[in-house]
Image 1 (cartoon, helix red, strand yellow):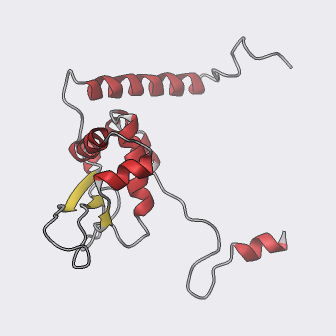
Image 2 (tube, rainbow, N blue to C red):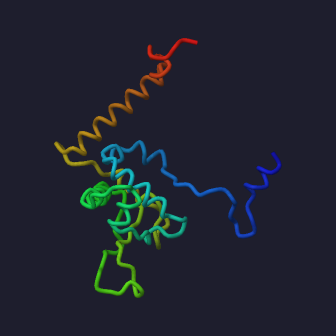
Image 3 (tube, rainbow, N blue to C red):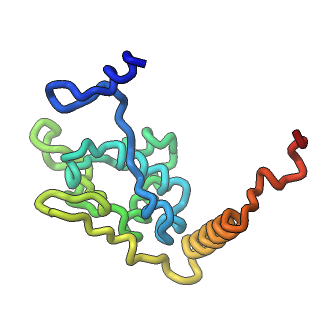
Length: 175
């Protein structure tokens, strides 16, 4: 017990010895824009959030090829679509475009991103752009959003009435 407290204690530099984590706010996960994201876009969102170290929002460098490797997706077109999806729904904003004319030692070639739910460079507060966004009608993203919101509504209704799908299931043996 004493060892555990000492391990979580902040050291002289203001850091602790525990591992880092990615914070996805409940407000993000419950938003209609998040419900409209494809699985690839959700995976990419987590990868971009894992690049954030507390101070570098607006300087998150990630190329399509590196994102595909990190996500485990071979099709670069699908990764590019995931970037486009995150941008169109307001989760990320490109702060610097990719360029290939400069040598790698002079400047990065990858695109640079900012997460909208975190304060960016020179900003005091986050913009939360995705809160105001919804996908266009009659698109697969809109159908995903509607199905996700309906499932979430059913879950909250069942939870409010005291019914839990796993507990009320006939497939589990009664104890």
